[in-house]
Length: 215
Image (tube, rainbow, N blue to C red; front, side):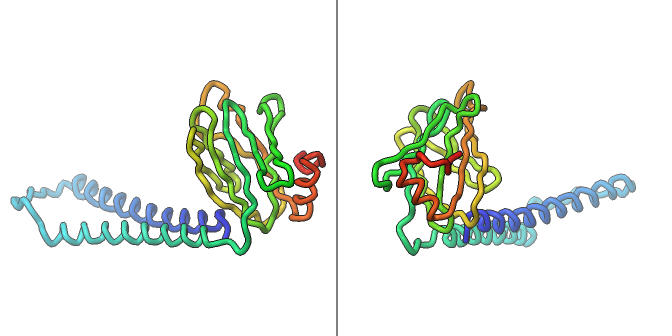
């Protein structure tokens, strides 16, 4: 199961729950407003507590909270199941204001970087059908690697490594960007992520990135 599918299921369910709660609140508010407009006199209750109603209320909220936490944890477990083979590793470093993608498993250590200005954007090349482990860090301030169309997002902190694993199920190229304000050129901090066939990826890696895969 890919991260996009997991995100879609979790986001879809949580959206439904949020929508139901919103409609219930609107219905209660509307009912109270109609009663008020109708001129019905409602005397305030002299009771300071209503234990049964409060117990139902707390029970329903608690059940929703437990369900959402358990559901999200289960989906997260499905997303991070052990891979059948060692993942492709890419070390991602954010800096003001661009990215470096290093491939430590290559025959000779390869890296791709750019200036993120005037079209000089680095490309993160990954193979399809293989788990790819991204290890994120930062040279200076907090950055955030974000690929909106693929729903991948994770922060990059100085002196710390965040890790997540993705598997691309089709070839293509997508725009990524920094999602954390990191200075006056933050808006230029874009990159490409390109998924190619495993054979094409291996040829590109063996060539030291000199072939035109990253274009």
